[in-house]
Image 1 (cartoon, helix red, strand yellow):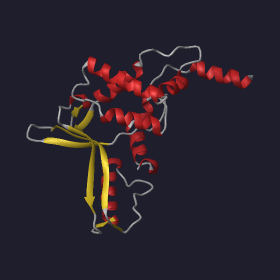
Image 2: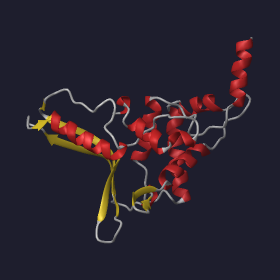
Image 3: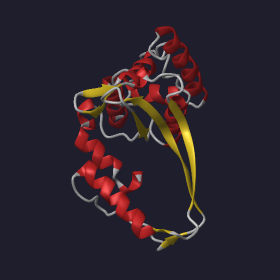
Amino acid sequence: VAADQEARKVRTERAAPDRFNFPRGTKAGTFLHEALQVCPFDRIADSEEMNKFKVHHAAIAQTRGLLEQWKQNSLPEEASYPDSPDPLEKWFTDITRARLPIGGDKSFRLCDLRAGDWIPEMEYLIPADGNISAQRLNALCIKSAKKVLGHEPEPPLVLDEKTLHGYVTGSLDLVMRVPGTDASHDLYYVADYKSTHLGDSPECYNKDAVRKSVFDPHNR
């Protein structure tokens, strides 16, 4: 009885659905990645377009059991789940309107991208043919990591094979072109979507926490 009362107390104290109590795991991560994969960034700032996007993906989340799980993770038993999943709309709005720095005091937002300026899930296929050494790739990865972290990642980035054969293949979540810091050239960026849960408040997602998460061995 005491355990049931305590469980009920915890459920009653839970907040309404938000990004912090959204279901976790592969199914939830795949849902978020797929949504951003088809997001019409150049039109998403329009309220009608955002509403269509939200309704469509809320229906997908419903069929996959994510909305029901979200309800169980958040609302108390006696509360009713809102008919319109507004938390999804706010979440996607914040994602697409967040300012991303590109140097100096310049920044851009995903909703500022123009049609034709991004490629979702861009595939790559690079022939190795035994002429790409793991040692060289390790050195490149470490050099890049040091620019972000200020030091070498721990544990170190290490590929087991001495030489790579065949092909290096995969896909990039998002490749995008944005206006440069001056009018003479454009800039190109690669975005890798992450849905790792780091805590239950915005403060848990500061720069240091995100950097540490990106270089965590489980996320590499």
